[in-house]
Amino acid sequence: MAGPCASEIRILLFAGLRERAGWAERHWPIDCTGGITPRQLWFTLQFPDELNQGIRIAINQQFADLDTPLQPGDELAFLPPISGG
Amino acid sequence: MAGPCASEIRILLFAGLRERAGWAERHWPIDCTGGITPRQLWFTLQFPDELNQGIRIAINQQFADLDTPLQPGDELAFLPPISGG
Amino acid sequence: MQLRINLHSTAFEPLQVLACWQEEQAHRLNADSAAEALFIGRVRGVAADGGELEALELEHYPGMTEQQLERLALDCCSRHTVNSCLVQHRIGRVLPGEAIVLVAIGADRRGPAQRCCQELLEALKHNAPFWKREWRTDGSSAWLSGNTPL
Amino acid sequence: MQLRINLHSTAFEPLQVLACWQEEQAHRLNADSAAEALFIGRVRGVAADGGELEALELEHYPGMTEQQLERLALDCCSRHTVNSCLVQHRIGRVLPGEAIVLVAIGADRRGPAQRCCQELLEALKHNAPFWKREWRTDGSSAWLSGNTPL
Image (cartoon, rainbow over all chains, first blue to last red; front, top):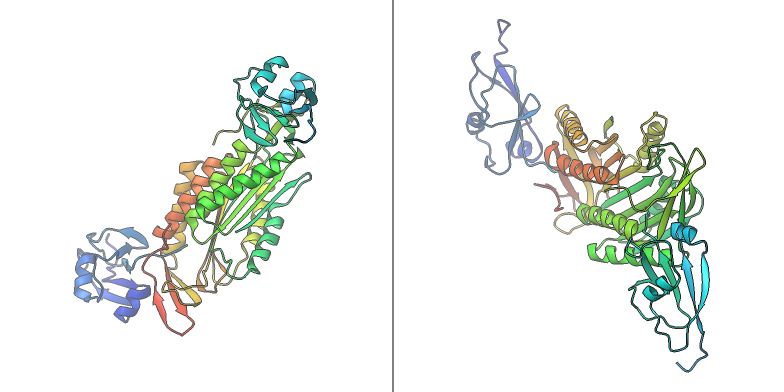
């Protein structure tokens, strides 16, 4: 809690979303108290996709809710619809 | 129809039923017009098993109903409960 | 539809049989199966009464068993529209750990492959004439009167 | 419960991997599985638009994909009380006919083995981060936006 503040988050994009956005990874400044949510970031970043078209997010490599407040140092990934197996 | 009359049927027993009955195969006289059913034969042959305990029959190697009239030359099998695979 | 059914009176190695089967399928034009569902059943080391099992004896009805397996397989495969069906079944004395049955279904999609594999396994367990006798290590034996629960 | 999950960046031969896995299981005391349900998924030769497929590209999320596969497998296996679980999945460029996924479940009875194999396959198709891009023979490509129907 009293450690140094990472002061940013890492944002990752994958597959079609990455290609449409034109970037794969970005570091985004965040103030030390955190609080911004993936949903807010999605609109700030102005992605070409619609948010309701099956986009899911992961925070620190675990599925999470779009409205989870982010903390400094978090790894946030926007995941387009999955097609594995 | 006008061929020679086989004048008998072949009866086969399997697995536990064969062992309890003490025989595996028998030729049984049947008159040329046929007509006796597996159910009637079952009681005539006085098997130690109960007929309702999952015994099935096959006529000429196909599952058949206990009350199907038998014809001369038929192969009749009494099948105790199946346990394959 | 490719169908092969064999009864083995001695031990068979499921993966070796499968390798040959897949190899043959791969050489058939337009017979690609994107989905393959497989089932391998082996003899348990434990008898129905909980004692140690020495061997399982599998009796069948020569002629009818083969015909019936083919009928069940054709029926199941046509209901699910699959590309290929391999059924291998042991007869005779089978030791713990050895394979009794192998069912392999190839289809274009996973749903039909899985459903066909499952249904054919149930069908042959209940409607192909096979009978199992357990031989226990103490020399005693008993015919099983049905299948293990699903 | 024995669990092994691997991602392969080059082609793997499902039956060879299975042979090694079964060999290892056979050497474990009291780990006999009387029932083994398996699924092998391969790349189709046809793209979603019906054209000829050159290759499928499989992207994943390094770290999360592995963790998520393990979580899904442990969850599914504990719900069905099975003995062993092997999951092999390709990443990178996969050619038509090559295996993409192998799921092998060992259990004491056929029901749990089959249900676990089926459910884990659905779980990983929908909840493990993989993305497929089709490369067509004319050089064009497209990301798939979901799974083939069940």
